[in-house]
Image 1: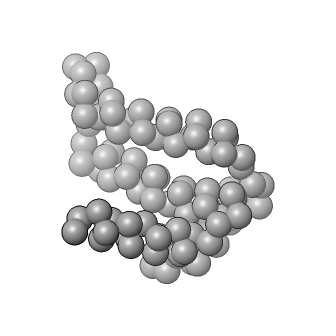
Image 2: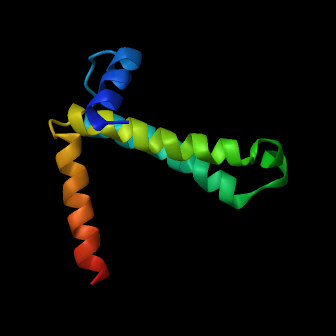
Length: 92
């Protein structure tokens, strides 16, 4: 999968509407909350705590963030390159 293809698939699904940073934060918070609930592992949530559910939520973060980068005017590939460089520097 290439980033540009993932971005196109995302636009095919969600259209060309651009979200603001505030709108992105709310959506990111929802997915992050789902991951937190998975980790909390409350009895009431046990039925949905499967590996497939966690993979879905992690995939949602990855797939959506590509679109959100572009929504904010950033090239997703450049954002990824910057993040990789920062993580390398941090690890040293």
